[in-house]
Amino acid sequence: MTPTITTTAAPDQSEKAIQVINLMLSMDPEAQSQTLARIIAATIHDGPGSALERFAATGHLDPETMLQELGDVRVPLEREDWVDALGRYVLFTAGDRS
Image 1 (cartoon, rainbow, N blue to C red):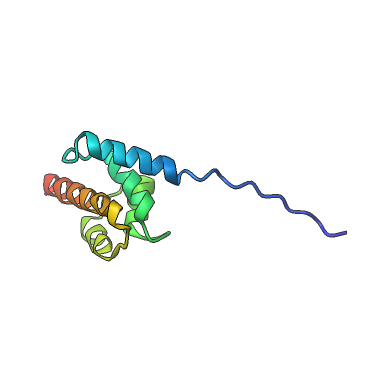
Image 2: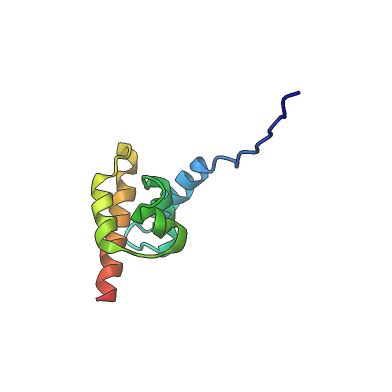
């Protein structure tokens, strides 16, 4: 008898994230909160170990590395505003820390 392994997948929240990001950007595209920035980073990062993934998970900001990663991100045309918004957040927040 072969043992059966049952796994439960977490529900896909991609559509919900898209709705929240688009809603927040439409309300005030210039005012970028850390919450919105972290949601965007979580949606576009390249995987574990990246600065964008670390920021999404912990809120730790590594401006130089994040900006390099943002320069390499490939997203659909309708999500380019997300990359721009996150880049502005990184630049403005890094400027406040210096």
